[in-house]
Length: 248
Image (cartoon, rainbow, N blue to C red; front, side, top):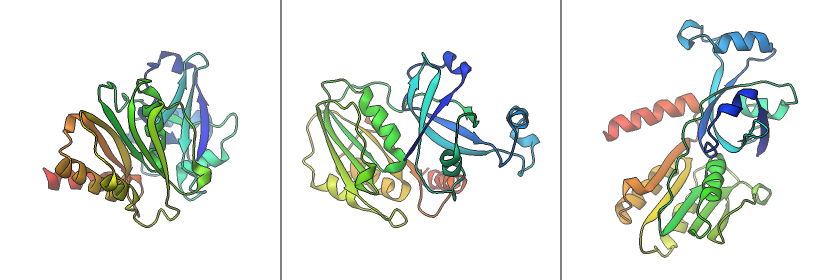
């Protein structure tokens, strides 16, 4: 993971509750000047050619410090093959990027008797931000699937939240480790709230298990696919839209 701190005076007007919310990052084209980039992002995308449009990628606001007008964005390090990863790897003081949003946090109210958090590397920021926003007396389990032990992070979690780190080094192949963990776990009594996100193929199986086997109410669950093996973000968005139409 790579953490990049972004600073902008306009962040002073941002709602301080936006930690854990998603935003859209607009990536400048290689060798584009800041002045040209500013002009382009003010133009409607429909008025720009495909070559002129900034690449958009969805990310989570990990931390927000209004006093210094800074936000932290965590990037999965894909090397220079991915446009966002490449930008983050080469970012230095003075580098620039566009930001749309942010939206509201995925979970605004914490009312459960027990919490279930599950995430891979792509969703680790939203899961961590959600955990840090929980009541200090919260109880539950968090499952993080990471590529190596070096990917483990520390954060301000409630004492009653058990944290488990599962290793899955080859992200190009599906993993069933999180689903297996859930099936072996003793299911608690009372209201269960979830924050679950990651690879869409696995998320589909997790959602089916929790809704059909555990009868988890929709209003108590946040379960979302953030990416899919073999697809870039635009392709994944189209895939999700098609899945929604088929389900509806």
